Length: 171
Image 1: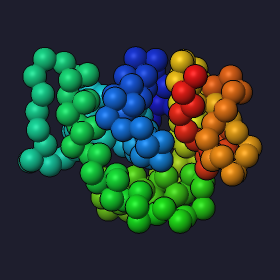
Image 2: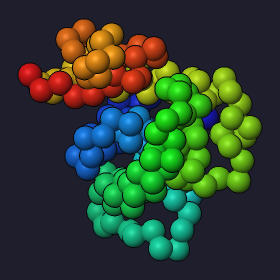
Image 3: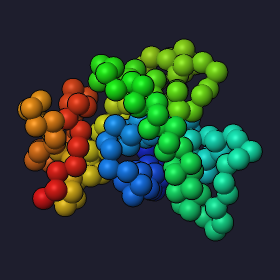
C-alpha cells in the first residue's frame, strides 16, 4: 500500500470529516481507519476509503467525493461508538487503530494484519498531515497545557506526543 498521502484524496477525506464532525478523536480515528483500509484512496476497489463491504452501503451518484461523504456519514456512528469504548485508552497509535478496528470490523486487529510499524506509520502520517492541513482560520495547533486540552498557535503541525491536545482553536 502506498505511504504517500495524495493531496486530493487525503485533503478531501479530511475536509469531508470536518464537515460532519468537530470531534477530533473521531476525525483522527477515521483518518487512521481510511489509511489502514485503503491508503486514503476514495476510489479503492471494494468500498472506497473505508472499504465498506456491506449490501446496505448507500450509493451516491456523480463522483468519488459525493460517495466519500455518504461513506463518512455511514461510518460515523460506528466510529463514535468505538471511540466511546476506547475513551480511557492511552493516547497513541494503538488507541486509534483499535477504534478503527472496532468500527471497521476486520477479522484481525490492524496490529496483527498489517504490523505495528504500519499502524504507527499511518498514525504519524495522519497527525503530520491533519495538523499541517488545518493551518487555516480554525487551525489546530499544538498545546502542551493539559488543563486547557486544546490546541493553540504553533503553526498547525501536530506532534505525535500531543494527541490528547488535538482540537480546533477558533481564531
